[in-house]
Amino acid sequence: MEHIPVLVKEALRFLNCRPGGIYVDCTVGEGGHAKAMLERLGGQGKLIGIDQDGEAIKRTAERLKKYRNLTLIQDNFRNLSPLLKKLALHAPRVDGLLFDLGVSSLQLDSPERGFSFRFEPLDMRMDTRISSTATAAHLVNRLSREELIKILKEFGEERWARRISKLIVERRKEEPIRTAGQLVEIIKEAIPRLGGRIHPATRTFQALRIAVNQELEALKEGLEGGIKVLSSGGRICIISYHSLEDRLVKEQLKRWANPCQCPPRWPVCRCQGKPVLRILTKGPVRPGQEEILRNPRSRSAKLRAGEKI
Image (cartoon, rainbow, N blue to C red):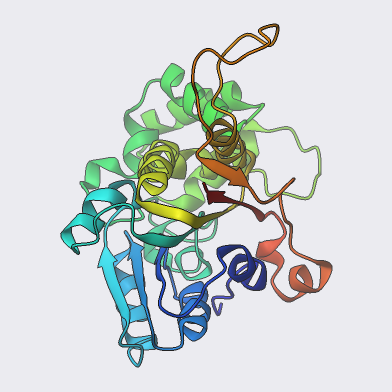
């Protein structure tokens, strides 16, 4: 499936891209947002694209090779601050940061990556350079039942976590669970047939992917590093695709906008917590019906943005 970037117009509007600025696409992926940002820059300024997926970096380098003001780096955005220092961009120098979280269409549709319900093997690593013992197959075959329950509950909000984990442990005694297909069949057997719009394996696959890639920890570190490198008036824009990410982003933006920790009954702030950011989105910005029809995978996207004071 062709990669279609989500909420492009909205992201550009909140980032306020302007010629001469320095911007970072922290999840450059297939380069959809990056191309739109580069066109806004008009050959001036600089765009730095980061992604931990080496294949995405290669494809984007080829697709956007005509843009001379683009620098691509294979790394995790949790290392944002040290990466920019290596490029001699000492904080705060950046005018805008874009985080487009989640999995790309090409990752979902690549058989060897194991993100999809249809394909094998059960891998799910965003960065295939990391140890093979960090794959989803390793987790489902090695973790205890209680550890699996914890992952499925915390990262997948899966109500049937106990039943799924119990059956996983039972089936792996018979033979190792190596493919996505094997795991899907186990989940279908564990969960009562209740109908519903989403695939029964959705929450389990989400939970395993988050655990394999340490996505929530990386997001926290990426946001913390991001606010440090933003210049005054710089914008940060985050597109998330599930409630755990969106909740984390929402709470972090609120902490930056209102860091006071004094009890509500105190008439004057004594903790001296000063706001570092102004929230630009009162609530999450969602795709319109036209975009959802054009790209069904955009339906769960939520965009939040802020401006550094």
